[in-house]
Length: 78
Picture 1 (cartoon, helix red, strand yellow):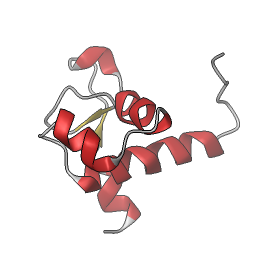
Picture 2 (cartoon, one colour):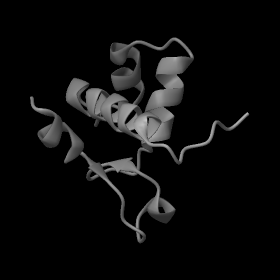
Picture 3 (cartoon, rainbow, N blue to C red):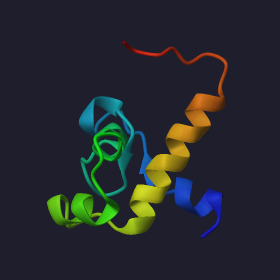
Picture 4 (tube, rainbow, N blue to C red):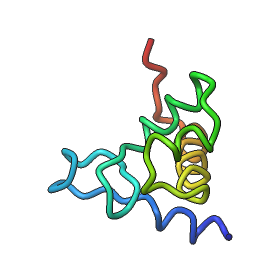
């Protein structure tokens, strides 16, 4: 799947989840997926916990995070 198609899986809607980036048609934050991966969860474990996710949703979250990291305006929250 191409990057543009993957990114269509991430939505930002002010009326859903306070406008935080989520996987489309869910209220699962991209940050939740990224945090799970950072804690060592596998894609399969994430999908077991959130069965509405697909492997492509996890890939979309990673891509979204990678694109944010490439911007000059991001700050590391410590």
